[in-house]
Image (cartoon, rainbow, N blue to C red; front, side, top):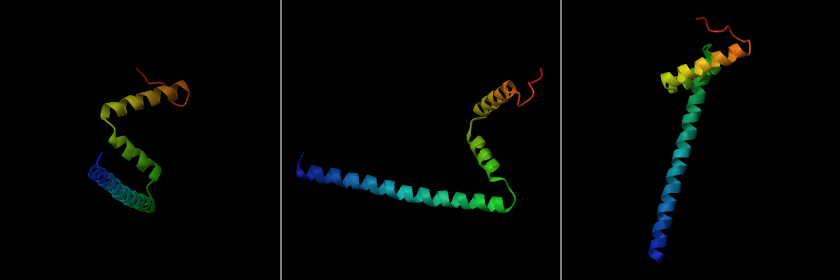
Length: 87
């Protein structure tokens, strides 16, 4: 590779690293904002553990969520933690 080719590769590498660093900074800022929102919700009497669970559930596909809920009920029933589904 020529000297010019090395320079171009170095410039590309530097550009990629700088873009990643900017995105990491933005990600940290967004994470801090989300943390503040949870703190605000907690201050208003909401359970943040449940809020996090709701956010996670809303990301899931409806069929995936129903399948997980059915498995949870089945496992809980098998462990005597819930009543068996009535048919």
